[in-house]
Length: 114
Image (cartoon, rainbow, N blue to C red; front, side, top):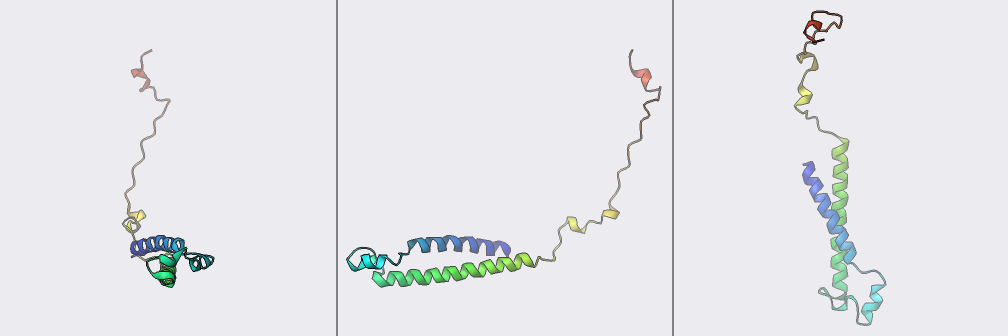
């Protein structure tokens, strides 16, 4: 579920950035009145603004909802345990220690050539 929310969140962020960059500023309305700007766009002079404004509002709402969802998911971690969490450390086998070697033992020194 978390992965799905992340994917929707990232896609929504990219769409939101694109929609904001496609919109014209408030100063573009004056240019459209003299025959330049968005007057000849696909949606008409006011249809473009309404379509982009509503699309941006939907994308912003979806981004806000996914942000809150991710916050909730990370603030309430699931109670699932992993495989290693179920291992009882007291029941684990212990490895016996290697025997200590006495450096003063002369039987080992016979094998060393002089």
